[in-house]
Length: 300
Image 1 (tube, rainbow, N blue to C red):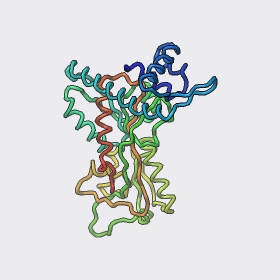
Image 2 (image 1 turned 30 degrees about the horizontal axis):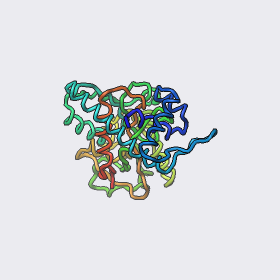
Image 3 (image 1 turned 90 degrees about the vertical axis):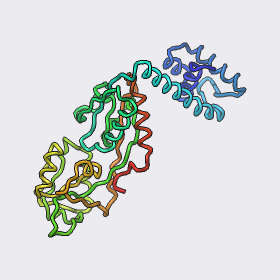
Image 4 (image 1 turned 135 degrees about the vertical axis):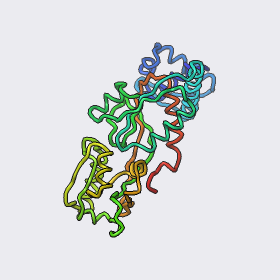
């Protein structure tokens, strides 16, 4: 049994098509058939049942598929790490972050940099103009964003990273009680523009419609710095993801959890299936580890 046999077996199991498996692995269809036959002889079971029209994976084949994928993935990771060690851990990763993705990417970059200090990180704000091209076209190696922003494409993979909740954010005023959601009707609403943060804008609008809240007026901003100056100076009230509020909080701003509704926004890291960056697997492993941390549900 070798890695080529396992790769072909995985392709047949995923596509249920010997011709497509051959195309994916750059071998002939007869070679794929021979690999499957060799594996069946080695394990002493049928991995697929075949007719003139259909290919069906057997129960034994399904069991082998799980282990085969683990073996191939482990070998791929080992090769990546060894290559990085041989090259002295050199490399560069370009990351795009949606304007509301702050705390979690920061954690990932910090952890990654500790383990691979010689791999540089190029960090920039994620453009929303053409996300599909930005991700699958190679403009970024990885993109952190709300899940609902990810374009529908078979060329894009994602990891669910965390869920964030919304807070009411306002300037500190000791003479007034904390705001409730309904009190926004008496306030000027300060928020990120739809162009700068489309999912956040949509979530806030849906929240206000659901609870029949109509602010006195609305002012939108294209950057967080301007928004926070407006909030801290008392120009109005805002609604922001908790991780954003935590990341940029100061003594002049108070925050309140919106308890009236479930305001969770799911976030992901997205990347192209065809990524060629040799350091990519190392970064994916870091993000995968941190995303499994139960503490990455902000606002609970």
